[in-house]
Image 1 (cartoon, rainbow, N blue to C red):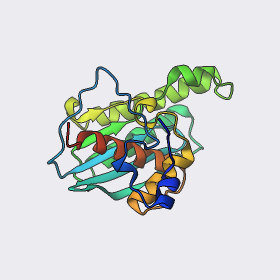
Image 2 (image 1 turned 90 degrees about the vertical axis):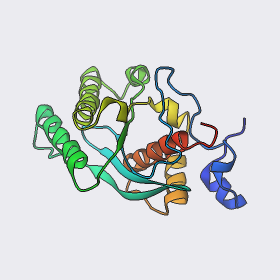
Image 3 (image 1 turned 90 degrees about the horizontal axis):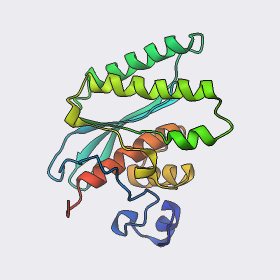
Image 4 (image 1 turned 60 degrees about the horizontal axis):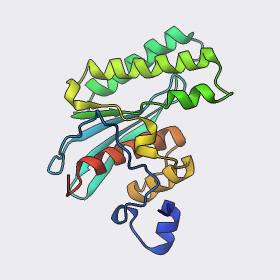
Length: 203
């Protein structure tokens, strides 16, 4: 299959959602059962977890896909040690979950831990710190939502081998929003993938 970027589709005057050739992957975790949200009109929280730059997005499901409600990147106080930053991250996630957004579902990216372990730029201590950051996000979200409303797909399930630029491009095309960096773009892209998956006509 030929994979085309959002920019190519835009140049060709096409909508990538019509072709099943977007940059996102098609593999889905076997244990994950997706809800049928074809008629649902609510709000979704999507998180790209990190202890330093945590991308987050809130999307509203619509008849034709999704609209962006709010999104951004959470940054901790770097004066804090790792434990302090985990506490800050948990407090931020709880604020999102219990704030003004009236959220119904949440989706959190599960990193490819084997790939991270192979990358030289991640020391063993960094891997542990990152893993705990992911755990902090998952714990905070599960305390705010019923388990059946929290979904944690791995990065390859939704993103495949797509590049950061491809994710940013698709987000800009579909949501008419320029993310501040790839962390925000990943959260928005994850949310779009989840809603696309759950709103399919042939679900």
